[in-house]
Length: 267
Image (cartoon, rainbow, N blue to C red; front, side):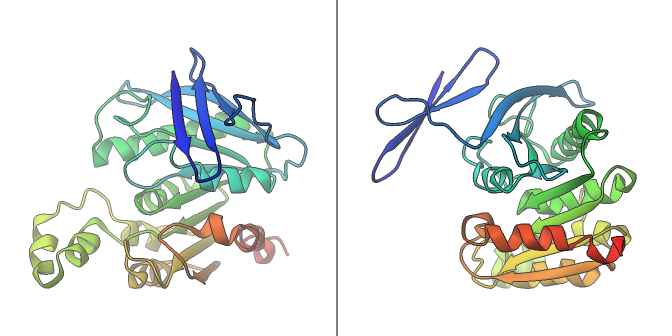
């Protein structure tokens, strides 16, 4: 199986083995070497769906922290590699999964299934890396950021920190903003399966909220709302640029702030 991604100067193709392990090739069909390995993993959620994931492992500079990366809405892990790649280059081990109904994962794409998927992925990461890593962090973007707040709150004993980037504050809040002057209709007609802003109020471990002032997908005010609802120790990183583009333009600063999350708690 092959996936092709085209750029202005080159074409990168991705070939998959029978076990979904990816191999990246350049325009000349030569294998591209990265400073990290990518391992395909398969895990089960509690509904019996088999989920596909990739585990990024740095070749030589592992910093002791493993990250569950919960990506945004739609697409699959092939199109959501920016964050995991930036973190892997910085020395983090990173697990990213296809949600149910996307990519190579089984099941249907529902909000309840996404929550089940995130929890299953965290359990897999903790079981696999818990005795090896010094810390376990959840990093969520957009829909995955809203999801991350709930997964983190419900599993606080398993993790050490939470990062949310470009996340909406609740399903009803984002529905209301998307419908403009008819926002009230979006709010009353949207089922609140779980709420990021409610979850983050009871989450007690280190928190980093990242949001762009130029975000045209999830309003900046919703990131601010999540931060305001959160407990100490917490920090807010205001950036510019597009929706969930932090790792693309601010990778070094984000990595620095992720490491800083624990300074106060470890003094």
